[in-house]
Amino acid sequence: MSRRTRYVALASGGVLTVGLCSGLVAYLNRGIPRGVAADAPAELAFVPSDASAVAYADVRAVMASEFRERIRRIAPDGVGREQLERRLGLSIERDIDRVLVFWAPQAGEDGASGLALLSGRFDAARLETVARDGGAVVSEEGGARIVSIEVEDVGSLAMAFLQPGLVAVGDLAAVRSAAGRGAGEAGIHANEPMMRLLGRIDTGSTAWAVGRLTDSGLFGLVPERVSARLPPVTAFAVQGRVNGGLGVSLVIEGRDDQAARNLRDVVRGFVALAQMQSIGIPELQAILDSLETGGAGTAVTLSFHLPADALDFLLSMTSSADAS
Amino acid sequence: MSSPHGSPPPPSTPVRPSFAASVSRIYNLSFGQMLWSRRTVFMVLVVGGPVAVALILRMLVSMDLLDAGGVIDGRPVTIDGPVIFGLMIWGFYLSFSVPLLGVFYGTSLIADEVEDKTITYLFTRPLPRGAVLIGKYLAYLVCAGLLVLPSVMLVFFVVMPLLGGSIGAGFPDLLKDLALLAVGLAVYGALFALVGALFKRSLLTGLVFVFGWEPIVVVLPGYMKRFTVSYYLQGLVPHAMPQDGTVTGLVLQVLQANEILPSATVSLIGLGAILAGGLGLAVWLVQRREYVLEQ
Image (cartoon, rainbow over all chains, first blue to last red; front, side, top):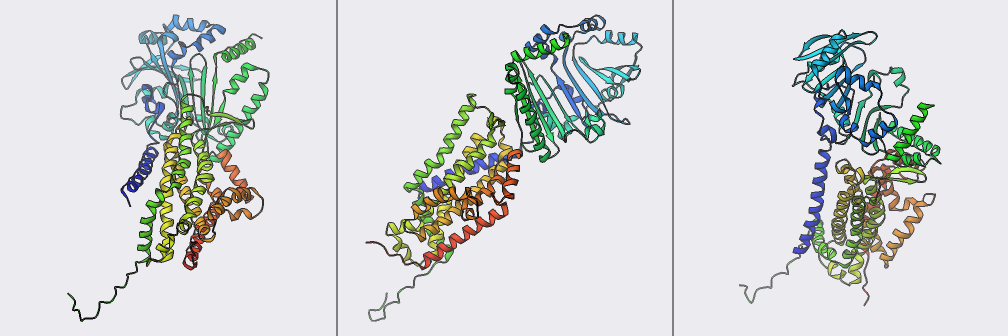
């Protein structure tokens, strides 16, 4: 074999070898967290490993967005916001940066309870005083002050100042659990299916939610006999990005490939139906044209983008419906 | 020093090398010749085409001129890297490059030696005639593999990450595709080695088979499609292509139920039979045929 033949063989074999090795490395590393799973908000540390759903919103980004401005033009803020500011000294626009909500089963209780974690700037003393005036009691758990109150038909509601600038609001048991959460305790990061779902969320999404629909129903909130009638969905991940318009992306995971195929067909059927209905309404057609469906394996994906004009159209439709 | 009166030494008996050693010698001799032949330059252009197409696609995507969404028959479809890669494997490689490589190299294994009137030199060596064919066939396999497989590898890395595709997730499909292409090269090569040993105008016969017989018969109803290589390769393609269950799974079930596509097992048995039968018959023919060179 001549030298140049050997060089050609080596170069060709080299491309193959390098390609196979790189592909293998990529294949082995495909499970490494991406997106929000890799760059998670700090509040995620308070989410327990058995949480069945987590939702997040970058309140500051939403409030500062043109999207919010358009909504405000059509639906001006009501008196609720003023009352909140007058009584608690709390302005949603000014004082709250982020909100993270999760649902998790509580020990010894049926179903799941939710907890909201609010990040921002809070006047803790004023909030506590207002709560005390309303009949709330204050206790301590894990170094955090917990303000709780019994509400008829609802149960014990509580609020705790977990860290400077971080308030937990929700069911008393859930608040206590979050307050007593040790640094070494296994959190959501130990929950591989949830982290995989979080990996589907792009970093920089303004709002997102992921959840697993367990055998006990939709996060335990929906009765089993109702969830049994729903399509066989096991998990979802939805994310939105707000700017002038609104971009939304949804991933649904079917129980198996067959279920996902059925779901894809259902989604495409609905999209086709909506496209038929939108004939003659260009604003609606613009939205439906941006709809993209797809997915492979057990995943079904749906994404769309609402341009600013389409958003105005939808908001005007909503406001005219409210007026009538 | 031998005595001038002594008997002359007996002529040395040529040592006949083993079959494997003969194959190895012919392989070493043929590989370089094959790699630097004019047809290799042509085949480099053929397998370079998909790489160029992949680069153009990548450029279009990076310039936002190509969108993942589209509409086929009024139905919205999403085209991503894995789908494009699967289509390229079938359209560029399995349907075109692999059969063409098989025809060009396979038919020339013996025919070139006959045409160049050099077959005498090979057949007068103390080598089994079958080893000559097998050695050349192996040289063809390696030469064709070195042309096609790196091209596929480059296309994979350029195309797979496009429009939301993932190299890691698509890697198992790449392995299946590489295996499928290797099988295709082996089977087409064996078949056309037989054609080259059997027919005088073997290149023309091969081209008619690949671009005339196969495309027509495969779409015709009936059993004739079983006498093509592409029928059995098609049976393996959906198993190797990236799975979008909606299309591939359902279509595959329908096609297999109606015997339009064979199952993976039938495909493998069919391809194995063509490979073994083609190569075996070619060896048998070469061993028995008397090649009369035109003056």
